[in-house]
Length: 260
Image (tube, rainbow, N blue to C red):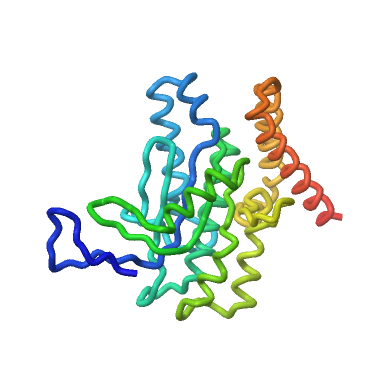
């Protein structure tokens, strides 16, 4: 789909065109409470920490970095839009795997080290960046995923995503079966049917020392206990941490079963 008119002040020789892009839309859960209770300096640090977590420079697994021109943020909101059409040398499925792995690291680091909880959505669709502004149907869809469907501390994956990438040329990095198997190692289907990033399970394979995984689980547990107590009388917020409590317990149960 092509927008044939150029924005005011933009050269008429340049067409503003939509590109098929991988879009991630995340925000900080409970940011309103942070604004009410933290200083401007503390909020600045939180936003910086989130940006650094979502744009990491090193991984145990080799994946492409998030480029600065793909990243937009406003207040606690972060949007990453990465074009995935040919002639990109990276297959669309590899872009998706890379993004999921980035977010495994981001969610884990922010939770374990800073007690920051993310919520969001990932989709694929038409996006354009013009005059440093991102817009398009995929941005709207990603917002809907985060705002209407994620609800709890999870980053959900659009149920249309594989239908869309299946139609793109050169979609698979290896082959469909292999790529989907790799992606499945980073994801999990929730009780309501939404696929989400299974960061607490996936991060185990990303640790330099797998022996530190129980300590990561303990830090995750302490954060949940703290938040359940903090929001014990808040009917809006407490259910979000009750979901996180259930997610933690089920992940630990699977980990213990693997160790038997």
